[in-house]
Amino acid sequence: MNHRSTEHIPVLLDEVLKQLDPQPGQVFVDGTAGGGGHLLAIAERLGPKGLALGVDRDPLAIERIEALDQELPIALECDSYARIPRILAGHDIQGLDGILLDLGLSSDQLAETDRGFSFNVDGPLDLRFNPQTGEPAWRMIDRMSAEHLANLIYEYGEERQSRRIARAIVKAREKAPIRTSQQLAEIIRKSAPSRSRNEKIDPATRTFQALRIAVNQELQELDAALKVLPDCLLPGGKLAIISFHSLEDRPVKQSFRDDLRLEVITRKPIRPGVEEIARNSRSRSAKLRVACRV
Ligand SMILES: C[S@@+](CC[C@H](N)C(=O)[O-])C[C@H]1O[C@@H](n2cnc3c(N)ncnc32)[C@H](O)[C@@H]1O
Figure 1 (tube, rainbow, N blue to C red):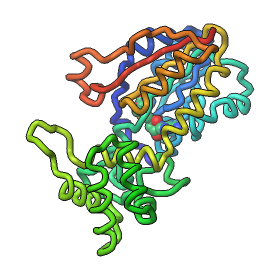
Figure 2 (cartoon, rainbow, N blue to C red):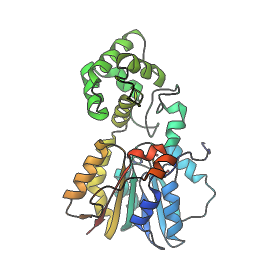
Figure 3 (tube, rainbow, N blue to C red):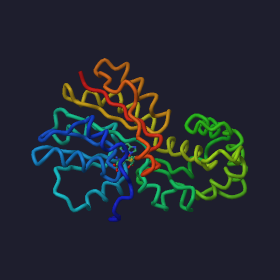
Figure 4 (cartoon, rainbow, N blue to C red):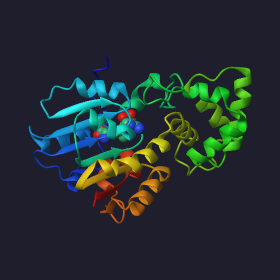
């Protein structure tokens, strides 16, 4: 059991509440419950007759929220947000007033050193949101050809030095199996060091992002969700999605624009202000888009 309290600060919280505008008695789903920040704030506004259903793929996130001492109208499910239609059927819910997805990983997952999300501390190179299903990252990089790895790092990490990094990974694994986040981070830092002093991010950032996206099939899950979630909303119900990079934001923007079931509410994405970025640097790349069921 993991009963540590959350370290995650919810991003764009005021803006999400303003846009979704939860009212007493309504039913909402937070498809990425994480540390529960958005979920609890929504549930508070729904009152005893409402319901906030929190979904997360990570069993530790669900356990952490379950352990909270609160009396809010909350139900929890450990599952993917792409399966929300089935989850609703299980709860006998006919339609939703709002859905929130806050994509990516949480600060809690970064802090859990035994999961491999952080490349600043050593841990097993796992990278799965749900460590009970799917293939860990170490196994993925064990079996992939250099070409396949390079394509993956390029596509999901938008990393220009992907070929060089993939070759270095393949060379390193011939000598010793790559099993930890530090091992991989060092291989990347040596093969593709920062090109200039102005580059502030660690050279390993983009490759870790690519592996995490691939291991969790994040873009496939997002695509599947964008197809099914509009049908879960009541007329006037809102779908709000916070993304953190263009690979996520692009499909959200396109799907909101092209989906005849939806009307776009945010012509331009809502971004955090300077104060929020100063308080929580993780928010700096966040973009919130909202659409409403016609
Ligand atoms: C940025 S955090 C959410 C933080 C949350 N809004 C809060 O206020 O604490 C993203 C969460 O989404 C979860 N997640 C990622 N992909 C998912 C998916 N396909 N289905 C459900 N949860 C997912 C991750 O496990 C992580 O806990």
